[in-house]
Amino acid sequence: MSSQVHIPHAPWFTEARFGMFVHWGLYSLPARHEWVRYREQTSIEDYNKYFEHFDPDLYDPREWAATAKAAGMKYVVLTTKHHDGFCLWDSALTDYKATNTPYGADLLAPYVAALREAGLKVGFYHSVIDWHHPDFAIDANHVERNHPDALELNKMRDGAKYREYLHGQVRELLTNYGQIDYLFFDFSYPNPGGTAPAGDKFPGKGRKDWGSEELMGMIRALQPGIVVNDRLDIPGDFVTPEQYQPTGAMVSGDKEVPWEACQTLNGSWGYDRDNLDYKSTDLLVRMLIDGVSKGGNLLLNVGPTARGEIDARAREALAGMGEWMRVHGRSIHGAEATELVPPSDARYTRRGNRLYVHLFAWPFQFVHLPGLAGRVRYAQLLNDASEAAMQVLDPDQEAGHMTPAGQPEGTLTLKLPVQRPDVAVPVIELFLNEGD
Image (cartoon, rainbow, N blue to C red; front, top):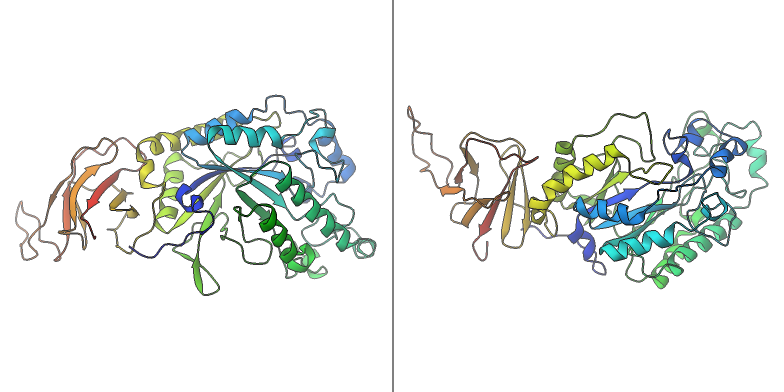
């Protein structure tokens, strides 16, 4: 087995492998993507109608937690504040918060309590971008990027004041809710960029703008066991590929690091009513397997509605994953990558002395596993624990009318039923000999 990369102070993270991301806020009311204010360059006056009508009367974080747990997820990460600056908790540093909406209550306290009750790890997302704060300088990722007086307006904005606000809010989040297990910052862009032509005239923002070193020091002091991502423009505990699946282990600097692919169900993070581009359960299960086979986690997003519910399409997708995880979860939770090379159209994961063969394509009768002859003491289909017969074909055996050709030396051959198990991805569990 290849050496695995773990977070020493938080081994739960790579044990968990599967978590739920939740993007929820004022943007759930327009239901046109979480960057709707940026995309449509909406003024604060026009965007304020969503603040005045935010009243998620069906919000029940216990239901969220139950949905995540049933899907096989081990942790949940909620947007405390997204780029629009709206806060889901009763921050003492702003009036732009849930307690001042018609809903009138802190949304984080019941969320944290529900996760703890369900035995799930508690995660917060926090945006370092803030389109609402008066001292956040206009840049290429700002709503007002095309304002004719943007550069003049920036002269009146004090980055030090915003930095103090950012640090103060993170201190609130890590002080007022007990133990927090996970923190996802979003995001740094130290080089100029963004939507042309705005990207040509504004500098980016990175570690100096956020005070990242000082911020990370405060986080470690307040929550020594927390895991923090890599988006403060300084190294974190893990890296976060977004909306793509890595082809292998991920490297930061010159060493392999833990990673977590953050993915959406339909290409949008916030609730997007008319977006119908939902991934199938089969594809989602394969994405999860593929990531774990390469040593990574999957953080799969849902965008609850403005009334606070996970919508039916998302629930259906998660229920499908949960049905697969119910019987195959031990090939995912606590599983790792391995140096062993699987056959084509398959992925390996390994947990201790058990090797899991995930078959993305169902073969006719036989599957050939290079290098495993003499190393496996028992094989079974994981969905029902039915035996998969093992044999080693003579490498010199010639193909005949009804005799298959031999396989390369060291190959283990498994005989499978003709009928494919009725699951998203069939899995074979191999019990390896001691020392293998």
